[in-house]
Every structure is written in C-alpha cells, then in structure tokens.
Length: 246
Ligand code: GLN
Image 1 (cartoon, rainbow, N blue to C red):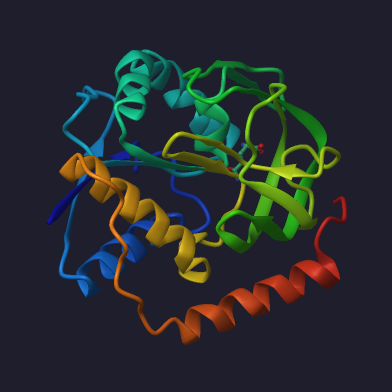
Image 2 (cartoon, rainbow, N blue to C red):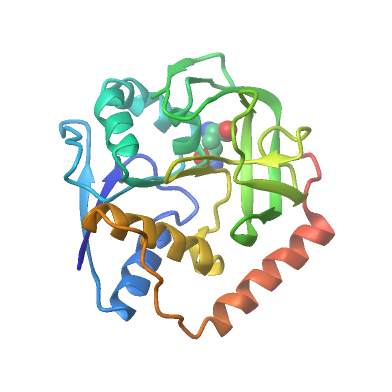
C-alpha cells in the first residue's frame, strides 16, 4: 500500500531534527512492505482533502511560525475537513501550537491558528526546556521539550497524555499534547518517533485506515530493542532532570 504523506512547510518548520519523524514513518512502513509517498505542502500549495492519508507539521521558532501562520490559517477549512474525513495528523511543537486557535509569541506577535485542535497558546517569559516522560493510552512516551508557549486545552479536550516528568502543555495542568480523532499534537521533539515506535505505528495504522476506508490494520511487530533502549535513556533523563525552569 502507498501511504500518502503531506509534509506542511518543511522549509520553515523543521527544528530539532523533526524531519527524523518522517524517516521513521518511511522505514517502519517499508519494513511492512508499504511505501511512503511524501509530498511537501508549501506556501503555494493547496490542501485537497482525500489526497493525503497523513499530515505532518514540525516545530519552529516564533519567527518561522510567524512566516507561515497566516498561510496555514488560510488552509484551515480543507485541513479540518481532511482530519474529520479520517486523515491522520502529527504536529510537533510550533506546528502543534498553530493547529489550535492561535499563538501569541514571545514578543506579543498574534498568530492565527487553524482551529482544528481545541486549544490556545500564549508565550510566557521563561522557556520550558528538558526531557519529558508521559503516560498515555499508547504506553509511555518520551521526548524533549523546548517552548515558551503555554498551551491551554479547552475543558473536555483530550490530552495526548499525563506528564510523569517534565513541563507539558503549560507546566501546571499535568497534561501534555492533544488528541482529536486521528490527529495528535505534542511538544515532544527529539525527534519524537525514533524512541516512541508505538506512537509511530499507531499513526501509520490510522493512515492506512484512511487509505483503505477500513479499520486500522494490526501491523506486524518489529524488533524494537534499540528503540526501547532509546526510550529508556530519555525516560531516565526526564525522571532526573525534566521539568526544571530555565
Ligand atoms: N516558538 C514556539 C515556542 O517557543 C515553539 C518552539 C518549538 O517549536 N520548539 O513556544
């Protein structure tokens, strides 16, 4: 099966090796004899619901976010339609913030959001930096966060997980990320997926379900020994050093 991935603004939203997440999708798909067909969706490109099974938005500094925010917000209607029609989506940090209703940057810049995820973000005057460990429905998830933005979920919104160590959405709610249908937004970089293969497989299975119109398939298990070790290292760092304000 060919899994069609739409990578939004790869030239702008690409810090902390977020592109490594795409490499993980491609390799884990290939090991199951699926093929990843990645197309960039840039400033000039339209989002056409039905043409991608999985959308990916990486992280960025306020400056890069500011450059794409309006363009992305203008694509809100087809992106929301695509996700409500069953496309999967992963958004990391800067991308996650822009999928909410809006982000006010460190210098007070007002950036419009897509309004897909039920949340809002405002930058505070300290950055929340360090390793993070989460407890989620998809098992433990570990990563690295570096954000000034404080994200508030609307009442009733579903977080990605509960913070075991680290800051999470705002450093006080105990929640991290947001889930809606087959979409996940999170602050976790690192990149996220090499050390969280279960999350990668969950997203791939959701993308395949969109492709076939059926249920998410059960993907053949892989030898994830190295990935498990990577997660343990990250989890241990989060336990000892995560969640300290800089
Ligand atoms: N510029 C945003 C913030 O500081 C996002 C940073 C990021 O993507 N790492 O909150």
